[in-house]
Image (tube, rainbow, N blue to C red; front, side):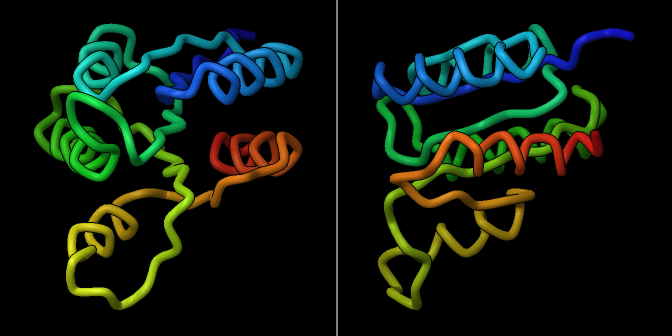
Amino acid sequence: MTRKTILIVDDEPDILLTSQFQLEQEGYEVSTAINGWEALGAVRAIQPDLVVLDVMMPKENGYRVSKMIKEDVVSGRIKPTPVIIVTARKLDKDPEREGMFEAFSQADTVIYKPFDLDELVKNVKGLLEE
C-alpha cells in the first residue's frame, strides 16, 4: 500500500514541526512549506493527497491559496486535493473578512488554533477515509 502524502503549510516552526512529527508517526509521508507561494508550488509539484493550510502566512494567505488549489483541481491541473484550513480567527459575519466565507466553503474542514494533534489526525484520517 502506498503511503498517503500530506503537505503542511505554516509559518510557525513549532506548529509545523509538531504536526509533521505527529502525522509521520501515523504513517504519512509529510512535506512542508512556510508560505503561500511555496505551498502552491509544492501542491503542483508533488500533488499531495491532502493539504493542511494555515491562514495567516507571508507571500499569500491561506484563503487565496485554498482557492487556487481548488481552481487547479477544477481545471484538471492537479488531482482532487482535500484542504484543511487552520486558523486562529473565528468565522463570523464581519464584512472585512468577506474572503473567509468563500475560502471556508472551499476548504473541506476548518480547525481552529490552538488545536490538539489528535484533532488534526482525526480530521486527516476522516478526509482520507482511513
